[in-house]
Image (tube, rainbow, N blue to C red; front, side):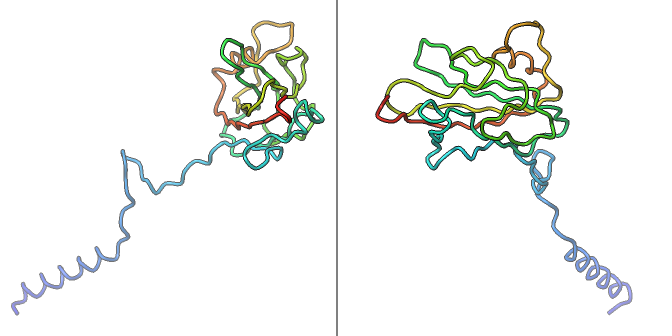
Length: 194
């Protein structure tokens, strides 16, 4: 073999060996590596929810009627406070029923115990008190209740002072400072079709 051909063959073998030793490039979609770690999902849960996603009777008007325990995880960076609501959409033609409005929960908090009084409480729509009121929806069958936690970049500021804060006031106050929300929908069937 001629010297020139020999050196060309050695160079080609070395290049092939070098290329084979390199790990494959990660898959890319829309300019972003699909192997990149996914952001953790902000999530809300409760020990008061039984199999079948049913709210334990203890936290309704058919039980002790105390607020359910709630916990959340993976709040986004920059969270300065949390707020929570619980509501239900009754049959068509009626306004939503609100059972819980609480805000000014510190960013260091990741749960509420059952029956808690932490934070500042807004008014429910059942008895207009600044407290939790337990679900007591009339009629047979399963009813659905939506719990929502809001991760906020600042403590809510309300435009109008005076009067108890209602859920709509809270939603208006946090519309530009909500970093993320997490929801938990629970069901309840009243005993004996009440």
